[in-house]
Length: 98
Length: 386
Image (cartoon, rainbow over all chains, first blue to last red; front, side, top):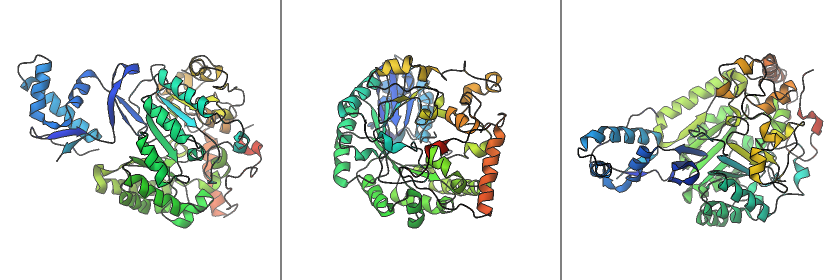
């Protein structure tokens, strides 16, 4: 997709129901499964997608992730999270809720 | 074979990722572009039992496979389809049903939904009823259209798979509109794989380069309008591209097919390679078949390659193309796929293209041969070059 989606801090995201997001033991990683395809996710990607539950806003889950990684300044990770969300949205993995 | 979402971003790491179960070669349709064996009817006896299929499903999952396709023939002809899909879902597979839709009912779809079926790929020929029925060899258009609506009503993600031929190519803009109306998420304008029945009918099916380029422009116009509501897969076929397809992502790399009789195949066409034997899951574990059988070892990696493949800097990208196409069109499966412009046999592809054009100009041999037991002498299946 060519359109670049703009992520706002108050947005909520959820996994696109076309995709199945789960842990895969044989790959020792999280994967996204979709019609006839597989994406293997690294740990950072999986951590961010885990927070796409349709409940938390982007700024809320940036704070949570920062806490999980003992990072006191959420700003440090905010930029990379937003970038990943935009890429994920363009790939159709996640969609904005409401 | 080009598949929706086949842009695999995962390295099989020596494990099969994708397993295709060809539950049966029987089918109520008689598609003129079918790539099932010409002698498909001889597999009627000897199909695996439910328990044998379950063993395959279990062993594939233990080896790390994540995607499973139930295909055929027409998989819905198997009464145990629901049981097998439910079993695969319980084991953690992402389950794909690849069907003509004929044989599905609302009740069966509801049951499959309950059992966890994740996705349905519906084979569709055209939005023009007459063309659709001509390509399928039997009247099936209305039935397919109504089952497509039922599939969407139940909320299944759906890939509409349309094999592109000269017959349906002019309708592509209208087929796309129909797909939009049906709200399908993925549209695959598939290149016909010219094996078996499709190869027999190639002169009548193969579109010209100009037609394909027109279709590509129409698809791009539609893409611009529809945005991300629908993903459309459409690539210029290998016959015209000059580059071979990265067939199966490499032989025995991530893909495993089990034929109705339990033979383990690196791809659905592999049985055309007559110098190979095809041991079955009736006699061996899936692990042994994948890791040690000669069938899977033969063209795995790049040790088997000849020139120009073995010194080509693209060999890790396309793996020398398709072994079955190399055999069918050049007589040796270890040759470079003739679709590659670097192949010394590339003229075979160019002759096929001009042959199809000539057949059209002369309006000769216009009758399409429908898939029927005994319709074609089996020996016709390869056109080996001297």
